[in-house]
Length: 70
Image 1 (cartoon, rainbow, N blue to C red):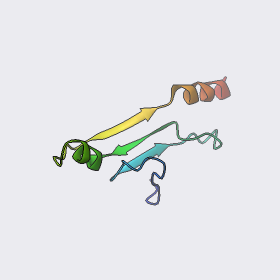
Image 2 (cartoon, rainbow, N blue to C red):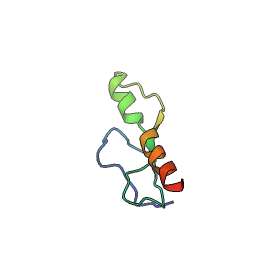
Image 3 (tube, rainbow, N blue to C red):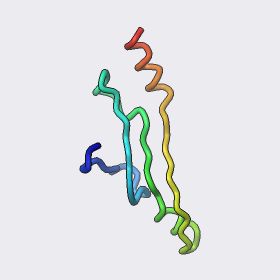
């Protein structure tokens, strides 16, 4: 856990954010990342907030990690 972690390239995240990095490949971007984006749903929903959490897994990066293990 790192309290200073934050998203700078996707401003629609407005609460908790996360990123999972591979210790074996510090040169890679996060293998998985995401967070809360309640403000986005409020903006798109005409002021009505819908609690939301989303994330992404990057299969191409996971395959690169598998190659390191082989």
